[in-house]
Amino acid sequence: MDRGLLVFIAIGIVAIYLTTTFVDTIQDDERYQKSGYSENTQDNDEQYQAINSIGDVVLDVSSVDAKTQIKVWNRSEMKNEFLTNFPNFVDMRDFIGDKIVGNALQQRLRETIDTIEERFVAGEIGADEAKRKFTL
Image (cartoon, rainbow, N blue to C red):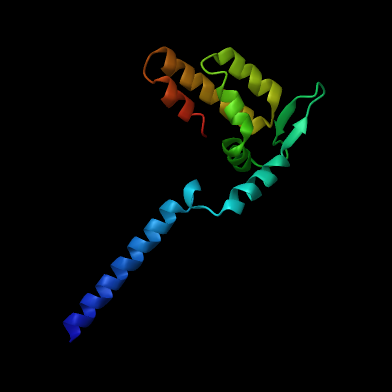
């Protein structure tokens, strides 16, 4: 009787562990999120968009901390627009200066461009891998 109870408890613990691990892995997967979740995050990201003096949309994250700046960058449409300039690293740097307001994010992106440019030109990484590295 005691052995059966211990086996039952052990199986229960393993089941709970596997369930919580599985839920953690799918929690951020877009396929499993409720349809309203992405709409809510997009609405929140619109507060970081502004219009500059010549009428272009810019990403203004200067009022938040560096961690939030990076989160907004990874979710923003600006990131996709930025990646259309790849592999023209000069245009990518100009994009950062023209369309992004936020010192921490600008600095992090410039450092990332420098690192990726060196590795891409040296042939250490391909274009797809280089683009993935712009997810900060």
